[in-house]
Image 1: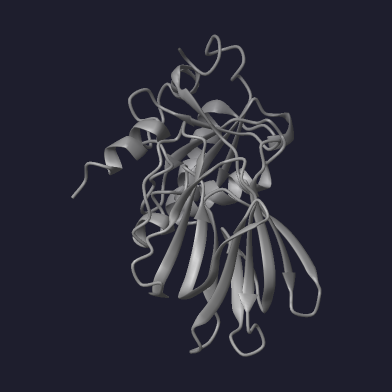
Image 2: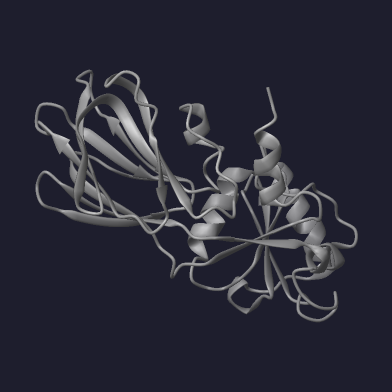
Length: 263
């Protein structure tokens, strides 16, 4: 079943945005000549031209707009993108499969009591800021689950982000339709054999920094970084609904599944 109705109907008005790289900008100009261009706020679909970095920025920028995002790869990795092709674009978008993504909501407090809020489509990661290893306390739904994790860091990942930093840190790949979050240590020193945990996506995670003045820790939600962390609360924001479109046979769900068989 496609993402919408007739090619000339729902997806008549397209907005084209690019990463600004020469290859992406040239593609944008060619597509505008072929299909026209509509301001994003008035468009039926936003077409992003670049790599995964642009896709993440686009999803963040239009979060809450309800606009579906269809990406075409004019960057490097392009895991979140479709293959670039100029012909039949409206039909491709009409026939595409929609993936619904719910981001994480991060609420952080630093050692001075300043509060910060950000969304993460991939992951929220805590990282030591200096040569001093971090010491962290982990609570889930208000219950202490680990009194002290001695580590370079720890992250909480969505299913959509489980093949990114989470996988590099030896975390599990989560199928897109699973209602789970991955809690994954980054180079844990103690307990050395702890490999992380799978949590239901309605869980509330709090991570507290122990000995924060001596062992400073930063927190990063996708690309938003806040330093000198005291504690952070992380939960899935079910009220935020992102719509990502992919060509049939190349959906985000299928790509995540394929990643599990790569070696």
